[in-house]
Image (tube, rainbow, N blue to C red; front, side, top):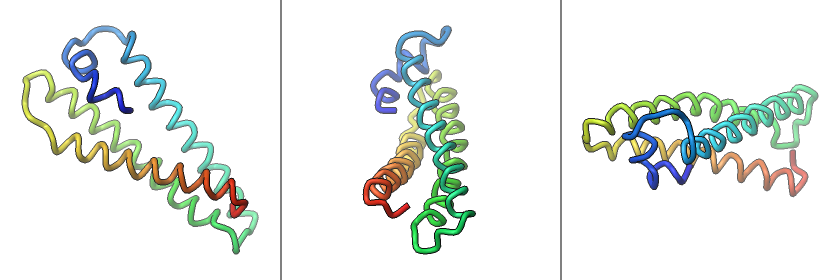
Amino acid sequence: MALLPLLREEIFVHRRTVAGPEFIVLIGFLVVALFTFFSTLWLAGRSLRGHPRRAAPRLALFAALCLILMLVEKVMVDEIGREMGPGREMTGEWLILYSLLAIQLAYHLILLRSLRRGSV
């Protein structure tokens, strides 16, 4: 995710087949998507089994929100890629993308902290 602004010329301007930095960014997005998807299923299963004192139901809703936000992130990356070619300024798109990524990072940190404390 951090490679997007660093390698924006290679990723968005010099369009070719997926290779090198693009492959690393793609793997990063897929790992985050799979982790969020499977943690959502796991948390939903925990909350359906009835753990009222635990944080699983709230985290399951937060995880579902993160899954929806991943679609918005994909749209934002496409928008950045489309506008990068003509050389337009797009700081707003980068701000939206990184605020969405920050929300996902917060979810993953809260989930991992909850798992470590045993509150899930």
